[in-house]
Length: 192
Image 1 (cartoon, rainbow, N blue to C red):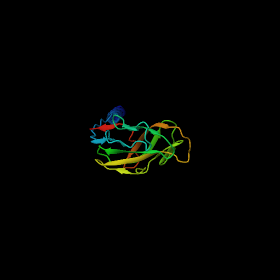
Image 2 (image 1 turned 45 degrees about the horizontal axis):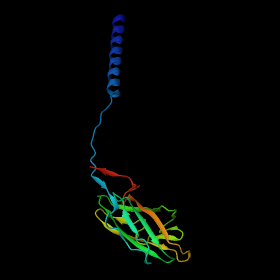
Image 3 (image 1 turned 30 degrees about the vertical axis):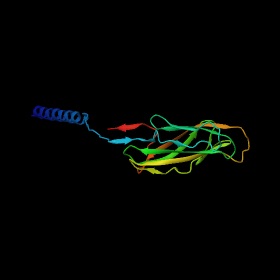
């Protein structure tokens, strides 16, 4: 009888060991999860090529000023020729949100020919770029277009009398409006 109890105990232990092995194998398997995400978003905020308007210097005889939007509309390059203190030029260009996400202006920059500054005035003495009509926080809804205007002026308090030429690039950084965090508009983001 002792032998049959030992056999019974051995069989029970073997069954328990097999149950533990099967249970461990069942819980140790990888559970595959798959899915699809469909994003129908189009981020496309830009200057509108062909909408550039620029006035010449108010002084006769200076070389005509130019404003050209880059291919793709990411920035605009401006060249101005000013003759005397107080001379200036006005520039306008359309900005459009051709995408389907709301945008908000995060910042804009003027670079080139030594321009420094922040806010709405950038300076390369004696030339100043003044940005009066668009500022950070302005929103641009999908499909909306706004006209951006700014002036380039020769600071009247600087009295040198040589013709001044300046070339600079102006660009905007946008973020997605209405969400926590931000999406930098300088990135190319197109998914379907």
